[in-house]
Length: 312
Image (cartoon, helix red, strand yellow):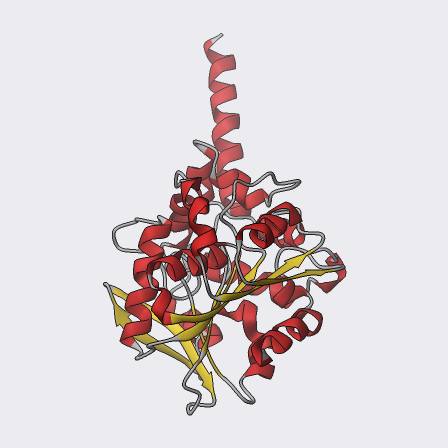
């Protein structure tokens, strides 16, 4: 019996060691990641104990810049192709939110929406932005509309891209999201992060898997290995969400573009129609053949309604 138990324990330990060897990844030094993802026009600003990664591009004479906020697990790079076009005539500002990209975790590990709203205010004040057109995807969209409620004088117009906020009835959820919410499993996720999990998660938020390149997956994977990001991802995904704030959405008076991927399985078009119903002055655009991140998956198609909205 003792021999059988010893063999069983040895087998389990051997399996754990094998999994660690195959799928365990060390944190990547920030300098190494900056060399790859943080070169010009990237900049960094000291803020609340962090070095916040951001990009400020385009027409510096533009007194009403466009500020774009990415979603969970992403980075400012998700708006690359939009920015390439918008910066020809507008000033465009993007940042890596705390917990993601090159910015890294909040020192206090507080990933509530309220804390993100405070961060946005501090960031905009620090770079001298008094008023802007504010846009956000998913988590970024949630931060954008909550920020608009708190500091309406700083927001001229609002762009909500598959934005979070309403209670979600997902048809499908990225594997990494599921793992981050599972006790014990989320501890493992902070050390063992198979690239296949990242690819699967990206696949989940795209409507067309043919648009997912190795370079795209590499970027998501590499930035997830920035020191502190894996634990921060788990911390963010386990925050208890207060949905009572959605009752205040009707207070938003800014003109708003509600832009949604028709095939978004994470935050379905049900939320798009709720925003459309509750917002006083909005334009709703549903994009065919697009998922949860249309600005990245279908940049040309998704930017068209944005350009039209900016002319109004």
